[in-house]
Image 1 (cartoon, rainbow, N blue to C red):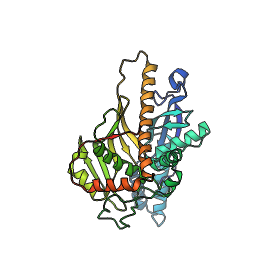
Image 2: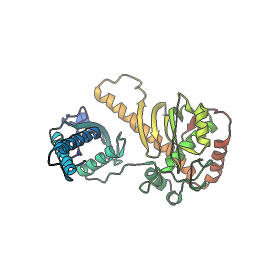
Image 3: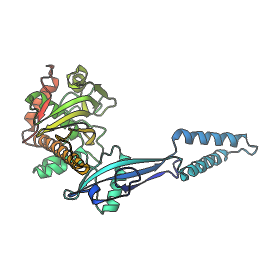
Image 4: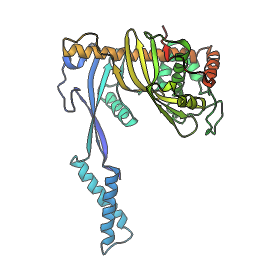
Length: 355
């Protein structure tokens, strides 16, 4: 009973759902476009659709001419009722998604979580800006960065590998994980999971460098086993100190999402990263050093901080890829594996950024 349901998307100036007042002073910042996309979706809740169908069935069965086609007629009646309510906007839901597009880099930062929102944003960008838009995941970003680092051939040959023991539930090969979240469309997304493990290892190996580091494992970390079902979520102000996190890692579970704090050049950003999909959520920026004199200046400072954060996170991922795809990975892999299996308590939680 999905007929008649759908969604549509369009641009707004970003202040609110119905803001159509596009102005250079509000929306153009150098080579950046700051706006928003409004996504309208029409969908009757499943519980309501089921209630309409059962009600129509009850009426059909109570009628004197009830026969084998009663169920078909009831379904048609329920569908007509749903279509009528969709047409009058009763079940319309609207969502505003901010967009920061840079025309020099031909990239857009969008806080889009989930395939439905991502698809709507990508379609609108392609239709209105005459461009081909692709949502970056950790795998597709790795391909792009590997090409810039001269490691394109190594990235083509990269495969998932077990840095620790296989999960007890796994039915696959113990040395070749098969993460179920890395499908054929994004087969290299496992590199995002390996990135979180590498960052955790770097944190405990290198010691504190608060001006140039990333503090990992804040608030929560979610582990999922490869080639098996089930997950473990450890919530704490410092989950890396919890025995549950260590046990999950040593039992073969990989981190998929973690709370992080990234710092560079005196700025710090707290956020959550779903590493395989490269989705950032809950980003918190440092307040500006001084009070902005105008609203535009306040926006410019926020945009600069967001772009600095994006560069810092990308550079840290690039530093990981240089090791993961470089010739010295076998030695690093052995160190990471030993670290995963040892039982010594955590020393620190800061991983240095590459210079």
